[in-house]
Length: 622
Image (tube, rainbow, N blue to C red; front, side, top):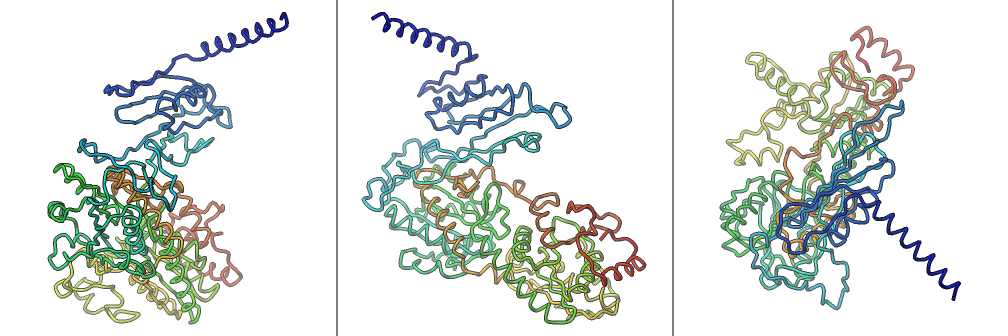
C-alpha cells in the first residue's frame, strides 16, 4: 500500500509539472469562432510556430493545410487570421532572429503568406438550391471511396531554406482540390450540358469532349449533352447553330483522331447573345476550352448569368499550344505539340544535311514550344525567341561558323520574333522605286515576303487570318530566309535555305498517350466540380495535383513568359551551344561558362575563320 501511494504521488507530480509548463508555453491562446457565427471579423493571434501546427487544424476541423515546420527560422512566431464566414485562413511568419548570410550579416525580415483561393458556389447567389447525394456514393460498381473533402486544398511548391525565395517574400497559393464531392447541386435529370472549343486546333480536344460526355452519361446518368460547332460562332451564326448531340456512340472513337469533332473558329464571344441562346436551350452546365483570352470571355459569361440569377455553371479547361496559361503545370495537348515539333526539326535536319550548305529554318508557334522542342531534339543550332532580342548579322555570322564546322545549320524561330526588324524590312521593300527595281532572291516575291493574302478576296475575318498566318507585315521565317541568302551571296558562299512552318500539321495531330491520360483526368474533374455546385473556375494541374482555380485571377498580365534569366532558357542555351545574339558590342554573358566565345567549340578551320572575321567585322563577342 505504501509503494502504491508513492507511485500515485509521483504520477501526480509529473502531470502537475506538465500542466504548468504548457500554461507557461502558451502566450496567446486561440479560440475557434462559433460554428454559426455571422461575424465577419477574423480572429488574429500570435503563437509560437510549433504551437500553431497543433492548433490551426482544430480551428477549421482539420481542413487547413498547415504551414511548414521550419526550424531554421529561429524564434519564429506566426500570426494567424481565420475568417469562418468566408472559410478562409491566412498566416504570416515574423522572424525575430532570422538566418544570417555567409559573411555574418543579418538577412532581411522573412515573411510567409498563404492565400486560399476559394471557388465560387451556385449557392452564393441561389441559396434555395437543394443538395443531393452524389450518384457515385450508392453505385455498386465501380466502388468509389475517393471523395474530396469540403475544405481540401493543394498548396503550391513550398521552398525550404531558399534565401532567394525568402528574399522575395514567400507567398503560397492554396487551391481547391479537384474531384467528386459526396453532395451535388444537380440532379441527373435536370442537367443539360454543352461543350464549346474556342480558338485554334490543339491536340486533345476530342479526348476532352469524349471524357466529358462519358463522365456525364456513365458516372452521373445525364441524358443530354451537346457539342457547340465552331466555337463562339455556334451561338450567333445561324449556319452553325445545329449543335451535335453527344452520345457514347458518337464519341466512341474520336480520341484516336486529330483535329476537332466540334470544329473551331477565332470569333469573339458576344456575351448577351451567347447567354440568350444558353437560356433558350436550357443549358445549365457549359464547358469551355480555350486560352487566357477565352477564359476572360467565359468569366464575363458567368458574371452575366449571376446577374440574371440563372443556374449556370461555367467551367473552363485550358487549351493553348503556347502553354502560357498562368498557375498550372501545362495545357492539354502540350506533350503532343512538343513531340510534333521535335519530329519537324528532325525532318528538316535530314533535308539540310543532304545538300551543300544546308540551312533549315523551322518556325514554331510559341516560345515555350520552341524551348521544349529544342531541348528534346538536341538537333538545333540556334533558337530565336520573341522575348529575346537578337541581331540578324550576329546570328548569320554564327550560322556561317556552324556550316563551316559540320556542313549545315538548323535554326528554330518563334513566330512573331524580331517584329520591329521585320516591319522595317517591309517598309524598305515598299519604298517606291526601290520596291519596283528590287529583284527578290531565293524564289518568287510571294515566297520571300511571306504569306500576305488580300483580305478582300480571302473572305475571312481578321481573327481567322491571324490564326491561319495571314497577318499584316512579313513573316519572320521568310525574313530570315531572305536575309540568309543575301548574307551568303555577298560572301560568295553557296547555301541552300529552306523554311518549314509545321504548326498546322502539329495542331492537327492526335494526342499521344500521356496527353490522353491528362485530358481524361482534367475533363472528368471538370464534370465533378460542376455537379458539386462550383462555377467560374479553371481545371488544371498544379504541382502534380489537379485543382480548381478561380477565373477571376486569370488575366493576360499573369501569363508566364520566357525570360533570358530563367533556368529553362539557360538549359536551352546548353542544348544548342549558341552565344548571345545581342547587338554588336553588347553581347551578354548568359551561359555561365566564363566566356561567350566558349558557347561554340572551334576546330582549326573555325579558328582560321575567326581570324578572318576579326579582320572583316571586328569583335562580335561570339
